[in-house]
Length: 155
Image 1 (tube, rainbow, N blue to C red):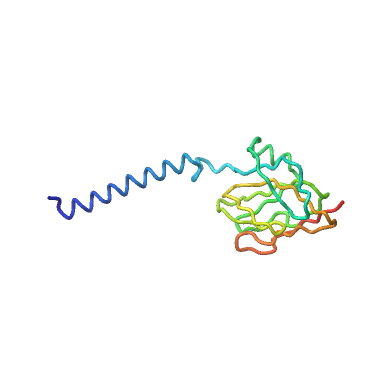
Image 2: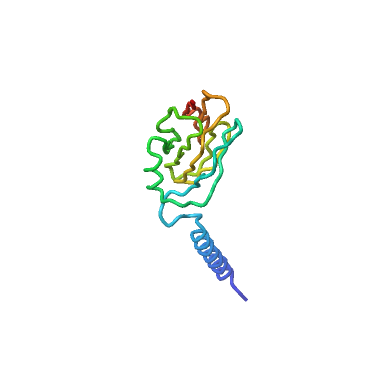
């Protein structure tokens, strides 16, 4: 018959093995990245035709640094306090821009009234379009921060 002490150690051992298996499985699946390199989605389709801001996703085909270079001047970063940098800009209607979460914390960001999930160090490339221009796309919420920026769309 097992003593009380052996039962406790058996339970501790089983829990430790379960924790190790959980960590290894989730690390392999991307729950905890091996290195904090950005990941995200790239929208390479035609811009939306409705008056709402929309996004789509496709397979990630370019490295992060190439995308940052490609979207230079059209790249918005959200810092660890969820502040958008730069916090205001103007673009031609239909321009695709890069939104980039530079925090390790996952967060939801509301862009033009639509909520998008950004994993830690994640990014999205979204076309900004509206049938009525000029039109202001408000970035109304990032995590707990509100009214963090806006983008004016013009012809």
